[in-house]
Length: 240
Image (cartoon, rainbow, N blue to C red):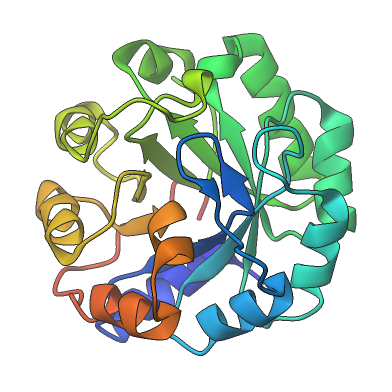
């Protein structure tokens, strides 16, 4: 499945594309699963017209695993994004093997050569790339690199997203991003107001993790954000 095509499809349906994330815990919020079955959680997410489901597999700080990714990918019928600190080609291969449709590559923890090598590996394994930035310096690193989606992380992954930055990061950086590149605003999104702000700034989708895991009613929360709606035109993908 294609996360890119799913985002476009939700836009055509006049939904605002939301990628809902399964995250077991975070350094800032603590235990996010709270004794629930993770597969039941993602199946609840899938009841909404989400564009995809993100699975965090980093084990030490976020409590994930590759086994969790495999279980989720075999349990739902929407595109799966694999999130971890991807640093080598073997991880890309394992992502594909585990059933991921797209993989996160984080520019802030890599140099330009490393990003290029990972992007080439993803292309060879036919897995889509969400290339994530957090700063102007990150934007310089990704010049001339092919990818499918550009993510703007509102928080700093280098401090495990424990900072208090908000959607103003998307509002600032999006002005410097390629105009024809679909953009996903990530992290610090917890309300309708946040989605409205990044939508107005020009974001094409949002990725929501902690807020959806903490919601009392996952389905109600996700639907409220999706129903912000889409009234623009889908941007052409760089690799289309």
